[in-house]
Structure formats: C-alpha cells, structure tokens
Image (cartoon, rainbow, N blue to C red; front, side):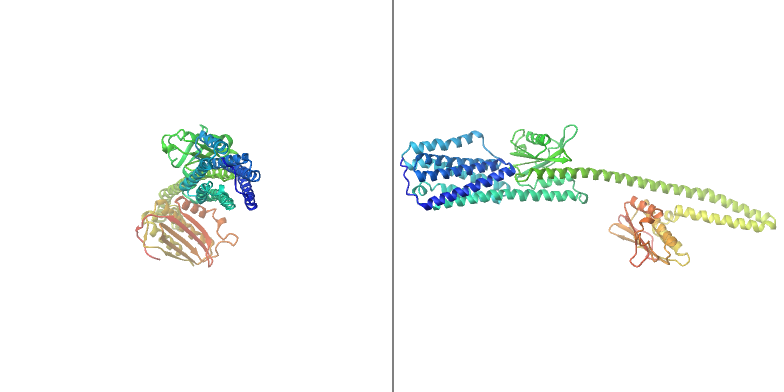
Length: 596
C-alpha cells in the first residue's frame, strides 16, 4: 500500500507533543489513584494511557522518519489502548467478560496491523477494519458507563459515556480526514479535549464515591452516637444506611460466635439471610474478613438459587471490637464495590465504631434489664414496707389500743368504787392512758391512712391538708380538679405519702406560715406540687439533694416505683417546692371539689 503522507508542518508536531504531555499527565493521575486506592481499574487506566502515549510516540517517529515500522506500532498501540480502556471500564462496573474475549481483543491489533501495513495496497480496505475496531471498542466503553449510570445514577459516568460516544464517532473520520492531513492539527486538539474530559470524568468518579460513601457512613456514625435517644437498634440503623449506598440492593450483619458465627440481621434482598443459607460469595467475603481483618470484595454468581440470590459483587467490612473481628457488614449489589474510593483505614475505623456501637447497645440493653429488675425490686420493697406498716397499724389498733382502752375502763371502774383519796391519781392515770390511745391512733393513721381506703384519694388528701392547716400559725390551701384519672393503688398511695411528707417537712424545717398544694391533670399524668413560703433549702443545696436521705428519699423511691418523676427545688420567690408526676389513664369522675 502507499504509505506516503502529506508534508507535516511544525504546527502538527507541536500539537502531537502537547498531546503526549497531556497523556503522560493522565498516566500519572491514574497511577497515583491506583497507588492510593489499590483498585485494579485505576491501574488499567494508567496502563491504557501509557500505551496511548507510546502510540503518540510512534506516530511522531513515523512523521519524522517515514519508516513503516513506526506506523505499524502506531496502529497496534491504538488498538491496544482501546481494548485496555474497554477492559478497565468493564472491571470498574464489576462486569468483566471471560478472559478469552480479552485475548481476542489483544491479538486483533497486531495481526490486522501487519496485514494492513505490509500486505494490503488499498488504503480504505486496510484502515477500515482497524478504525471499526477502535470505534467499536470506544463505543462499547461508552455503553458500559451508560449502563452504570442507569444503575446507580452517576453524573461522572454520564460524562464519560458522552465523551466516549463522541470519541467513537471521531475515530470514524480517520480514513477520510486525518489520514489526508485535513484535520491537522485540529484532530490532535480534539483528541486532547476528549482525553481531558475522560480524566475529569475519572476524578469525578472518585469524588462521587468519596462524597456518597462518606456522607452515608458519617450519617450512620451520627445515628450510632444517638442510640440512647432512638427506638431503632444499631443493626437496623447500619443496614438501613448501607442500603443507601449506590448500587446496593441488600445488606446483612454477620456476628462471630463460638459456634462459628451467623447472619443475625438482613435488609433488602438479604432480608432472608438470617433464616436461609446465604450465597457462597457471602461466606467467602466473611471468611476473608475474619482471616485478614480488612475489607473484602468477592465477585461471582455462584452458590445462588436463581436470580434473587445472584449478585455481581459482595463487599464486606470488618466489625471490630478492640483488635478482634466480631463480625462483618456485608452488602451486595448490581454495579460494583460501593466502598471503592474509601480508605481501608477509614473502613476499619468505621468497623470499629460499629463494633463499639453494638457493644454499647448490649451494655445499654443490659443496663435497661438491670434497671427494670431494680425497679421491680424497688416496687417490691415499697410494697413490703407498706405491708409491714399495715401489719403494725393493725396490731397497734387491734391489740395495743384495745388493751389500753380496757385498762382505761378498769381505771374508770376503780374510780367509781375506790376511795376518794386515790381518785385524783386514778383520774391522772386515765388521762395518761387516753393520751396514749390518741397517740397510738395517730401512729396507726400515719402508718396506714384509713381515709384513703374508705373515701378515696381526693378526700383523703383534702383531709390531710385540713389536718395540717388546723395547726397554729399555718395555712394550707388545697386546689384540685373535680375529676382525676383512674390510678393504681400504688400510685394513689405514693401521691398521698408525698403530700404527707412534704407537709411534715414544711412544718418541721420550713419555718413557713403558708403552704399551697396544687393537684392537677395534664397530658396523661397527674401532677402534685407542694410549695411553702419558708426559708427553702440551703443555698449550698438548692435542690435539697442532701436532705433526701429520710422521708423524701422514700418518696422518691415510691414515685420512681410507679414510673413517675420527683423533683425538689427552691421556689422563685423563696420557700421549698416539691413536684411530682405520675402516669395516669383516662379521666373518670371522682368525688372532690375545686379548692379548700
């Protein structure tokens, strides 16, 4: 064939050298990315641009010397560049074909270039198949990125698909324009433009992965820090966030156990993994994580039971507790590894955080169980304490008080039949016995309020306020709604005892003249507030923390035992204030007035 070319101008050589410089820049870029992330497609892209740079060196040498050997290598390296770019795109999308196809693609350029350069005399017959191969490989690369964009929604892949499509079309003008020198030097500048766009697209792919992966993992990190304020468990939060990663269709959590470990939670297409056997690729990814302690990606569709179980890739992140691998977060999808541009160290740190969150959740659940157990014990102790008070009240009322009453009667009989000389002593003895009976009745009333049993909560609390208000120089006001929600016996007794203890403390320690008692209902709760105008709690103990070791400490236990809240504080205008909230049900009519 005629290998003659038009006279090459200095401008065309300058454009060729500029393209060589741009190509070397792309080699460095992809090489740095490969060294940074150790992903195979970055290495393939670096190799593709290195071969493309060799192709430019061959065409420059041919233009300088006119030797057909350089033209041959120019044709070969052009085909190899297209084949490597296509293979890199397929590896990137995690859908590489079988290797024998790659061997065929690699053998076509040197074989056909030899035939075209040294055996054919017709230029269009020699250039046509090579150009078609180059354009087809570039178009196939564009299709790979287009499919990837359709699967995960990637603007960078869309940019690469558009650039590769236009570049594939641009290849077709070679036999008609560039080989005749018509495009010189603009053909070089157009190739440079496509190369720059491809380089920008590769960078954008990395930035997309970093942005999307970091946003997802940091959002999950924030959720893990708020575990105590959420009803959702750590495994559910981890799997839900993992499903937000691009191309991920399912996620599962594997935890190591003494028996060998198992998948304990699943979401998406992995929802049944805890109950049915996962595919073999999932177990292989977990085995790598447990063996090496680093993130692992496994390809393949083996071990499945139909398309539901088939996944092009399975990625696993180690879940660490300290230095030990406690499990793995496994994700599967149709596109590729979603952790592509994330550091192994970052993923390991994230795995440590997930492991710590799981451990904290175990501790939190254990603490909740222990708290519930303590609450049950507390309620039991309060009930036992109340039962003991009831027993003492009955014994004092039924035995001691009755004995004293009998003694008082006998003293009365002696007074009637006895000598007048001892009458005064007998009267004095009867008075003392009467005081003892009154004291015992007061003790029994404090031990177990009979008014609470006989009349109900509102009348009993009103009577209690009235009894304290009857004391000299003390006024007690009592405000309450006409209705109260139904309360359990423990809650009613807790409210009554709170009022009793608060009034007693105001009288003993408050140095007050007025106590205001407010009983109210709001938002499914019954509220009790007791405020006096006394000296309040000391300034160094404004919340009365050091004064809750006696009766108020018992009230705190009672209120906590019924699921309520108890607070002590100084009022805004002085004096002490006790506030109590206990949960209530639906309001029902009860006896009671508005105020007294």
